[in-house]
Length: 219
Image 1 (cartoon, rainbow, N blue to C red):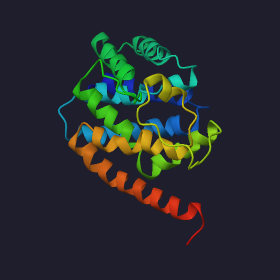
Image 2: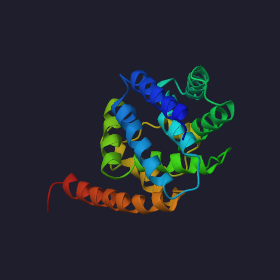
Image 3: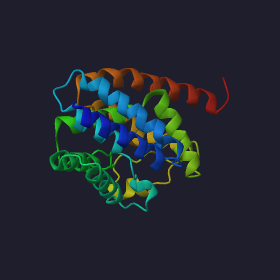
């Protein structure tokens, strides 16, 4: 990367940190930083443009639609305006905007409208942060934020939700493991992502075994 690009990354970090200052715990600056570090780790084994990966990872959750009444246009618009303001090349800006528009797990059988090796890397990095110990912590943190039950044996996971049903779901947090988190291991794009996801997936399975063992009291 050029010196100018390194400077633009520093400006982007400062912008994201300030913008997400009061964000919900699972979608805050520390989430962004973990995704950024995961993305750079995966990049070492992939043929990608590191500058685009860095900017995409930093800006991927700049305005998560979950916190903007479901409006999926806020994030891309904020990112485009910021990158234009710090003189990032227009081709890179369009790529980063496409990444933001296509990174999310939407539930249902949504087809991804845009593909690139850079998106593959950032998507894997983001999904890694949704599984394993951090994934468990984030799931229950968000469940508490939305005042959801931990678990209700009478409410079965729904694996056939549309995108709209998935976004509107008020199901217990444990259901979210089956409706999203346990599905991510097999949706990883890169070899490095798959390898890390395998270990984190095992941890979630162990967590669920322990959770159910404790639910009715130890036998």
